Length: 252
Image (cartoon, rainbow, N blue to C red; front, side):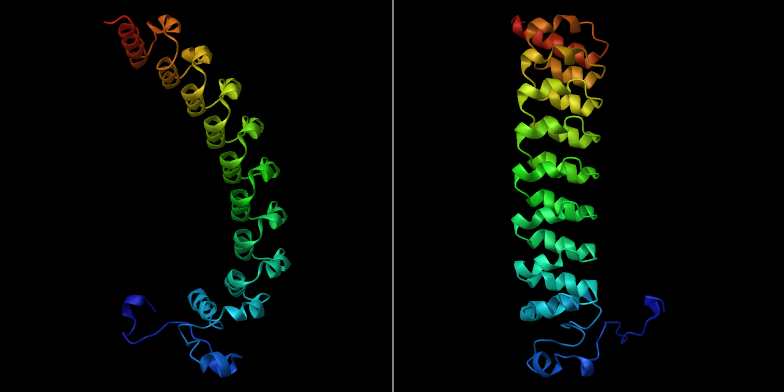
């Protein structure tokens, strides 16, 4: 039935049958559950979440439940030791909870998980010195997290990454002395980052870059002695930048 034509008193809230619930004689009678609102048996994530909020001690009972959402919500309340027994759970939502809650020392077991959100969480939590195992992950978002957190001295392994955004992150963090390795990157956005950070004395190759935005960034920082050749640059903004810097240096 179309929602706009539903009777005003209709109620589509999922409700479970309390008569068959194992908690009817303890939790229900004590007001720790409420049909249609706080209920672990209803097919409703909202109700299940509320149930475990009031009854966290029952999470263990549902760690192996056949309904993935009960397992996933129960996992928020389980001990880390119990979570270790759920690493092979068939549902990715459950494993995402594990990735957030497992001790860091156990995260390696999820580094090859088939779900990218699980691997992203692993990449976000692993110590920087353990991130190299994810350098070649098939998903660029996972590698992006790696590039943001890996120790800068190890980032050279990612300077030829297939994804432009990953390489931009690498260029933004790579030690300055290694940036020359990225001067010929295929993406102008990456070369612009290099032009912004590389040592001024090493800017010469970028002053003649095929992209005017890279040349402009380079000429804003390059030694004055290297700017004369850009006075006839094909781009107006580049020429203006060079003229302004040279005039300023001459006091005019």
